[in-house]
Length: 81
Image 1 (cartoon, rainbow, N blue to C red):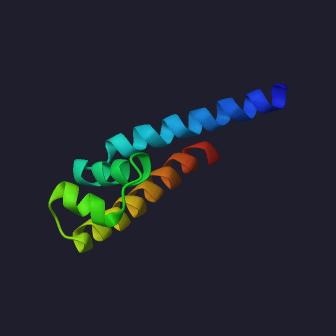
Image 2 (cartoon, rainbow, N blue to C red):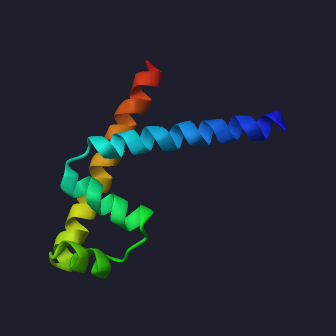
């Protein structure tokens, strides 16, 4: 139906926008987000992959998510004006 198609397009645009915002993050953050959510690796696996401690991975992931949320909020603010 048209409603389903519209929702699909909206979801796709949202995904593309988020992907573009992730690419704007510093590389150490975007890499961790990619490994965690695209490759679906655990903190331990990311730690081994990047040769850093699990604590470093957790801190970077939390900072990346926080920064990404700020970027999304900023983008949403542009539409609310």
